[in-house]
Image (cartoon, rainbow, N blue to C red; front, side, top):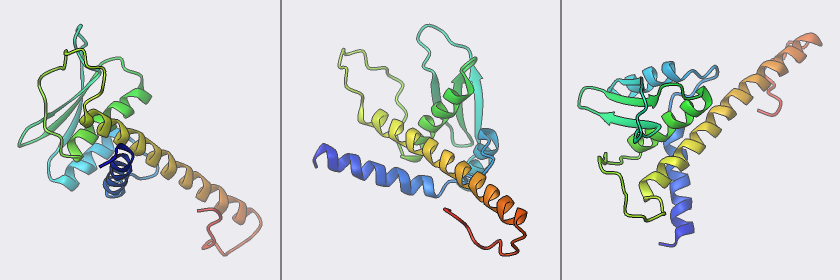
Length: 158
């Protein structure tokens, strides 16, 4: 399979997975993880960790009883969301945990990392889309109400 074809398949697979996730207006990561954990029947917890010299910015630890998403303490909130989405990508795309760090000098990313990054970017785009649609819908209703319209079933641009 050509790289472009596998990339298209990856995008499709990520989009299908993201479509099943409980992404709602007013997105808040801890509430989302709680709802996703209930949906999966395996709790998900976000924990902060202290950084050491070799600590990655984020990490996923899965157990039979619970899954843990670790993010380095002090990471800016926007980056926390990306790290959480990246680690969720590993989890939801079925990647097996790897305890070894590749120090072979090979500069190419392992395919699992490429998949998790693609998932993270598409997840963030979906969250932004849901928020934007929610704001537009609210603004449209406010405009219609200001002009005395009682037909609030009309959804401009949504």
